[in-house]
Each structure stands twice: as C-alpha cells, then as structure tokens.
Length: 299
Length: 273
Image (tube, rainbow over all chains, first blue to last red; front, side, top):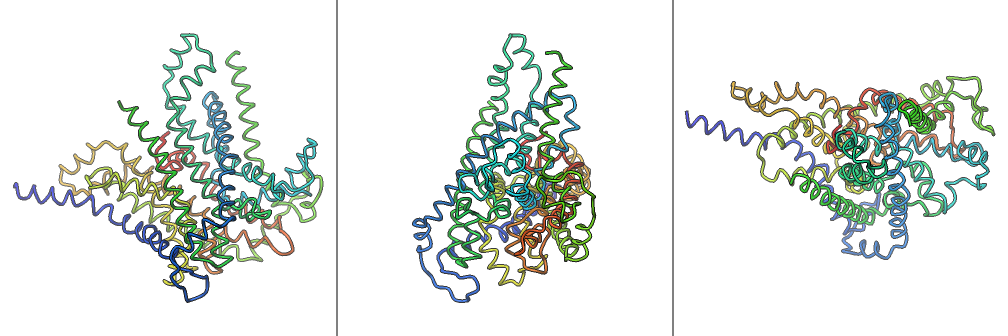
C-alpha cells in the first residue's frame, strides 16, 4: 500500500516535467538555439548567397559602434516612442473613461477594437494611399482646413515620424483603451462613492483614486507598447521603407536591409544580438517595477 | 449635469471616435469597389457606380487563392499546435511542482517581448540548410516562437480560475493526472482554448517580416503578397484594396465575436476582464 502510494506520488511529480517538455523542446529549437547560433554568426563575415565565410572576431560589433546609420536607426526608434506612447496613453484613458461611463459601451466596443487586429501591412498601405499628396484623403482634409503643406507628409524628413506615429496611434490606441477599461471595470464603485460623499471633485477622484488604482494596467500597457514600437516593421515597410533618406529607418528596418539587401548577414546578426539585448533590458526593467508593485499590493 | 444629458454627450464622443477609427477601413472598402477612373480623382469621389471588378480581377487573374490557402494552412496548423502544447505546459506549470518554474515562465514571457526580426538571420540560415525555406511546414514551425508564449501564458490564466479541488477529486477517484487534464481541465477550459486559438490565429495570419524573409513564391502568405501591387507602374489601388479587404475580412469577423477575449490575449493573461 505504502509502496504503491510512493510510486504514484513519484509519477505525479514526473508528470509536471512531462507536461512542459514539448513546449520547452520546441522553444529551445525555435528560439534558444537560433539566438545562440546568432552569436556565432555575428562573429563571422557571412554574406548572403556566398558559401565561404571567415571568422572576424568582434569586427561586426566594432563596426556597429562606429556606424552612423545604426545610431540614426536607434534615434528614429526612440523618436517613434516619444511620438506614440504619451498620446496613445492619453487617448486610451479618455476612451476607457468614456466607455466605462457609457450605458451603450457594448455597442461601441466591438468596432473600436478592430484596428488592433487589422493586418499591419494592410494598414500601412491603406495609410500610404490616404497620405498621397494628390488624391489622398488625409491631404484632402488638410487642404479643407488650409493646413496642407504642399507635400506628402511621409516624404518629408520632418513630418515622416509624426505621420508613422499617427498610423501607429490609429492602430494601437484601442489596445490601450481595452486594457485600461478592464482595469476600470475591476474597481469597486464603493471607493468612488466614499470619495464623492467626502466632496472630492471629479478631477481629484481621477488623479488621487482612479489613476493610482490603474497603475498596474498602465504599466502593462507601457511595457507592451514599448516592446511593440521597438518591433515596428510592417507599417514603415509599407509607408516609406525607411525613407526619405534614412529619416524613418528604425533598427528593425535597418537590420532587414543590412541582411537581405546589402547581403551582410554577419553584420545583421550583430544587430540582432543588440536588439535582443535592448528588448531584454526593457522587459526586465518593467517586470521589476510591475512585480515590486504587486508584492506591495499583497502586503 | 443630468444623467441623460451626460449619456447623450458620452454617446456623441464615442460615435466620433468610432467614426475616426473605422474611417480608414471604410475608405479602403470604398476604393475596393471603385472603377480605376473613380480612384484617381481630386477631390475624392464619394458617389460612384460600384463595381466588383477589382475583386474578380484579384481572384481570377492573380495567384490570390493560392496565397489565401497558404495563409490558412500555415496559421491554422501553427495555432492548433500552439494551443495543444500550450495547454499541456500551462497545466503542468500551474498544477505541479516544477523546479525553476518561475524562471521558465519568465523566460517564456520574455520571448513575447523580443522583436521576431531580431532572430531572422539565424532562422534564414537554418531554413536554407534544412530545406525548410519557402515551405509551409517551415513557416508554421517558425511561427511557434510567436504563438507558444501567448498560448502558455493565456491558458495559465484560464486554468488558474478552475478550482484545484475539481481535478483533485477526479484523481482521488482514480484518474491519472493526464486523465484529469483530458477529462476535467480541458472541458472546463474550453472557452480558454477557443480564445487562445483565435489569438494565435490572428497573430500568425498577420505576421509579415519573418514570412517575407523566409518565403519566396511557393508558400507566400496573403500579407506578403500585398507587396506585389507595389509595381513599377505605380500602385494599383483598386486591386490592392480589394485584396486587402479579403485578407482582413476573416480576422475582423472573428474579432467581432471574440472581442471579449482580446484583452487577455493581447496582455498574455496579465490583465483579466
């Protein structure tokens, strides 16, 4: 009896490992192995389509640090973050508050979320069509408002990043909205009533009660938006391919160009490693903030 | 302000935003049913004789149907595999003691945060060497790196909502842990399985950069095929918008019905509605 209990418990312990084994094996093959292999690639001068490659040590990394175009691509990515995160957060909060207060939210919600799931490359082309300076709809509306500058907004180095940010904002504000709405709906109304009884103004209730209680949802939104802006590729590829010049060339676009147009796979590998590092650092940073916060909440 | 006045104002605001957010899709749809001559006009034309010509051209004169089948086969198989393997792992990680399970979970989560293009160079070399370049199988495997983190984390959040006592009583009555999983957890998690499947489907269907680099003619998918309208003679907007509409229609229809799962799917279960 005791023996059978023991074997049963033993198999019970093993079961957990058997259950996670397939996922781990697959992820090691499709993610860990390629990542490690890429370190190796980044030490070689791999050329696309050429069978020979030689070990070049750290020269790809040295090149990375001295490559003006690489630093430019980092700056472009950073500018895109600055032009997207604050406005999306603001619009997302306004929308979430409006939906939370509206009796008819269930009629609006299914339509408001559609941009999030629309194929990004399609979004890019639809907006390219609307940005056209001759028959594009955005240019047309700007003309009606006497705001049209006379050129395609995506073809000018000064306006191309805000234009891409506009497309990104169109696509991702609904994401911010639904996450914050979920947060708002999980708050109990008794907190508000107590504050209202105490005579707090709506603005004070919002800044002193709502926002602090939404802190975790806001952090989750910021984490996902930051890493997703870092990976933005499709809409830029459809709109400008990094142009004019290199003024909208993000790190992802430059990596693709380097590897598959300039055929420098080894160098693109070094960029890939760099991108992996940035993404990991950003994630660790947010995780730390989110986690300490949750722990504090549990006290 | 009275309650009804407030609701009226809110409704106006929401209608405004909905119009703004739907407008580009609506305009793309209008363009897809326009004749060539109605597209290139200034000011833009709102009233015109609609035509299905663009749709017919895309379906009959190009390889669109082939690309659509590719998209469907690749995303369905990748999503199905992910949901199944993800369910096993989520069950294991949430119900059994596994050494280092916190670290494993964090590692899986971090894979969602990495831009897929950051590992496209090794993918490309591996695909060429293994003969999986430009094959549907190769692409379905590669997409697992995007789908599995979603599948594991999302289903964890669903399994955690199922009381442990239910499967424990099943095991006391003689069920093996796997038996309890199949007979008790899976049926209870059915909506989670469905939601996860939809999310994986959307992500795989929309994937562009990896697919573009890892395919050529044979297993090209719909998003990548959009590039072919970007021709030397200029963009063929009517055809392209018709192709776009047919590419996004399945996803949009799915989403209208699966909208309540979206929050959980997009945040990997960290925000639950």
